[in-house]
Image: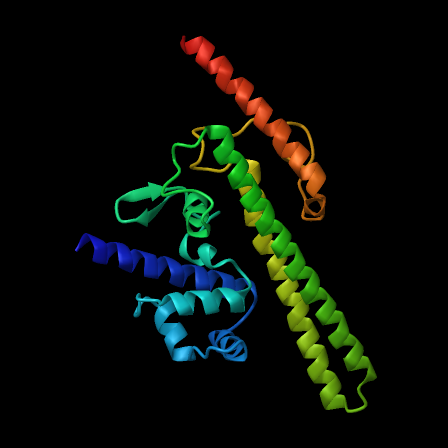
Length: 249
């Protein structure tokens, strides 16, 4: 019974993340269904509705992979909602931070790697969030470029009806871009808050790019400075841990 309950919870978690990412793109269930068909695996709208409404909790691996592909997110992000909950039940009876669950799926760490050092866990988690921000930035840029291309076609179209259709499509792209920007704020806030649930108290961020208050999506495009920031961040945490150890001793 416990395993059945866990499987049901996983199915509902996937449903919630599919709904969240679909809404962030401004898509209807039908649009997502159409996109899955375009990519090679039709998933009827009724099936998507049943999944999202919780009437169907047994989502197959193939469906998770296709939905992740269509929504342009990592498959693991649909299974373990990193950035939205503090803890997940990775497998029955094993609880961990959602990022650790995703890392286990990708083969980066064993199940579960809760024993890794605090600094190592934080570094891996921070890099995960940075990748999510970079991917979100790329998606928003592509959407914006497509929107401008549709605007250009609207101007060049001789038929008023076709022009109006292009303008409407362009506005949908720009709206999706705006919603994507709002979506990324959740990742930024998670970084600023010091990864709730991973540490007992907020992380003492160093005053270097890109932490904490001056972080922006644009800053994420500089991998070197990002790594420098993470390195200094780790040094500060290591010194803090040493200080606590000496005090306890």
